[in-house]
Length: 414
Ligand SMILES: [Zn+2]
Image 1 (cartoon, rainbow, N blue to C red):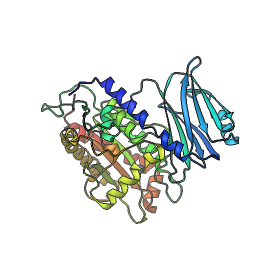
Image 2 (image 1 turned 30 degrees about the vertical axis):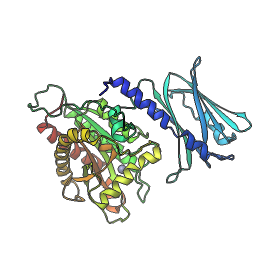
Image 3 (image 1 turned 90 degrees about the vertical axis):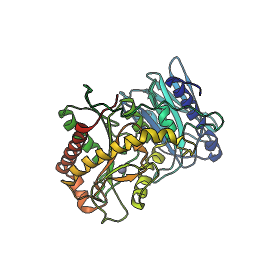
Image 4 (image 1 turned 180 degrees about the vertical axis):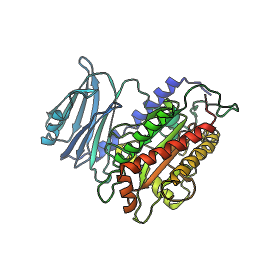
């Protein structure tokens, strides 16, 4: 077995991701008369995303230049229009990465975007095919240089690190998890809260237009306040209206060495009668029921909207995962039970027990993780509950108390 350092593995994973960038498929789908219909910029602390929406698939090439630092994106088979010209005006003065954007018709059939940068960035450029209300999109993500967006363990889990059958790639050695011992660590437990959806992905939307992404952010912020008052170190995968890929959410929890990961959502179903609070843990063998399957699908669809390439690679070495996940699953279930019991004092439960589903966001092999479906936005009674600040605060209180009860009994790692 070849020994690779963590850095080397990251580099390999990153290289693979670049070769996976679907340039060839973008070329194949290119149409000569692409019309730009929308141009958006989402600036945020974590990264800035530029999205160009088009009537047809776009083919593109991109490269970076120094002195001054800039990223150039050439879009073939396209003509400049007013939508594209409006992009320059959408750059905010305090955007952490973009100084300005210039757009021009470079040749008769090529549009050139020049993004002047304030700092050196790690960029990912990719296309997305139409999904829900979105048409073809060209996405340019700018991350701060040095951010570990390609955690090799996560790449393995997500199947993006494609192991060649002949030369098996070594996985990062699993942490010797739960090696006896009392919880005598003096450090504060670390909690990662994960408000679902965000940015271009609104999550569920109620009859009255209440968006899941806003509701769950508000609950997570309230929970953070309470948990910090209890003495814990608390982080959030997002604390603003921004799209964060599912894999990055888990990677953030792992890089913070979180002891607990809690993803917060609001449910929705085709039938408005479905209601009740639910708590899910990962079922690595897939969804345990039809409803759970439906849920897993809708939650994982977020990546189709926001753009993460998952290959669903069947060659992932399940043995490695099994070892570490067994202990983590046991603790996830404990954590889920505590949180469900607290939430059960507040609202009726969808089922009386912790349920299992194949949510990508729960896949950290070494962090007890749960996904809380606070209530159903598709149910009129629960929609009005979620719309009330008082209920959201109670929800946050119940989640916090459940986490606290779990942590008092937990054996912390590391
Ligand atoms: Zn959700």
